[in-house]
Image (spheres, rainbow, N blue to C red):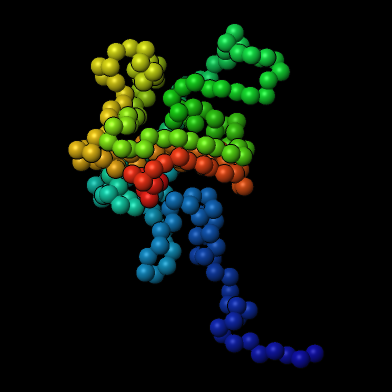
Length: 212
């Protein structure tokens, strides 16, 4: 049997890279915590803190860009449990006992949260048609301290005073960040619902396509 000389630069001469393994494990669980810099991949510790509910994380260093003002709050909002409940409506349904379809009416962020327990990792295809942020779109103000009241305002069951959404005009200093914050929490929850080979399709125009 011929002995082959192993050089120090060959994989066989090196022990297991535990750091790289740990990074890969974290990346699989929380892809949003991985950032790239001059030295390669690194871990954003502030994002980890936010994901586990650490209240010491602040918004002071957020700015418009890959990080933007309000991103941490949008992430926390996605992780905040819903206090809502999905109620069946057989009297408004067709073929209630045999149908394989379901139609849910409600605030999209709250419904996405409620779907996590039963449908996480099971959805084949998701299609969404969000606001294009043209300057005239309604952008949600996500505040669910009183779910029923806000839902009634959103669905125009009450007057517009104190409405939980407003027009995101281009005169707003946070024209793009308002839209990003609205989308981020929803996309984070949407991703959790997809299967490994699932597909997410989104209709958008040039106003926010690159941000999306």
